[in-house]
Image (cartoon, rainbow, N blue to C red; front, top):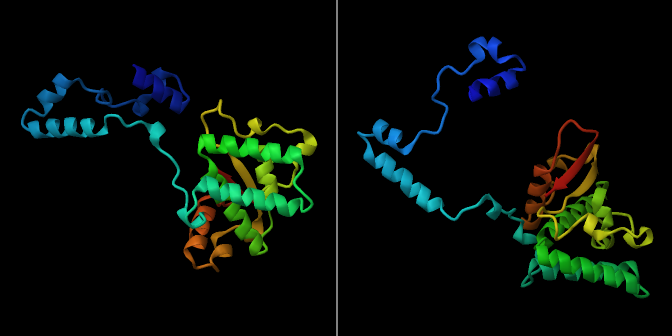
Length: 229
């Protein structure tokens, strides 16, 4: 009955009028261990192997799955967090050559601490590398969305808005209270958004960036939006 109801919902029709769209039998269900033992009475090893697979998977959770970020973007001998910290402070000194304002320093320290706590440094580095690579090739790109709340994104050139001038809250972008990674949206000019635009580079670092670019490439849109996360 439940299977027929699900089929009717998918077909957008009453259950009584499903006809041949209805499930043909009642086999689409989880069978009990006793029934499986009867069905595989001649193949006991199959059931034993099933239990071995189950035992091998014990302790695994989908929450353990994580993105694998390119290791090539790291500075030699430095962790992702150390590399990000170095880049952010270097970019801040370039943006404010007469001295980084105290409120900006406080914002950067706060953001870097939260990024370290949530282990998101590699993600920021990946996006920064893509943006930096695109601009080195003259490809127009611009970060947008909640990433504009980040001073780190601003000083790295990912976004163009200074959050301190608009009193924007970083936690609207990254928060320890939300169990989800940040989402940095970057638009690219549509004429040069494909992988062909980045194939000029041949070293390992550019290959990693090009791979990330290709995974974030969307066809059939007036602009290309990178939504990593």
